[in-house]
Image (cartoon, rainbow, N blue to C red):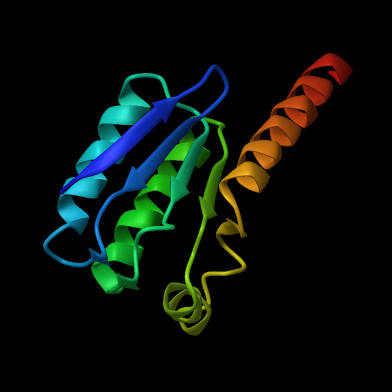
Length: 125
């Protein structure tokens, strides 16, 4: 599966460069998530702007990323969902579990806000 990774100081953006995130691509995506978090990623943005279709195994891979981010006390944000993918997320009742934002820039802003809040909580302890 083709994808790009953009690492910044506070976050990593993973962008699958495929139209379908299905049972053929999901295992590879899960492996990449695990590798990223083992390498120290805490905050991950999954940019799905190029993905037009996601099936249940794709959603399962996305939930793995969410769990890994939670375990590393980080933040996971989905960005750039098209109408079909967003509908599937809502049908699956995952919109309350996942942090979904319309654009990559809004996702980056959310990560910075999360980091500021985390720092403030630590300072207050």
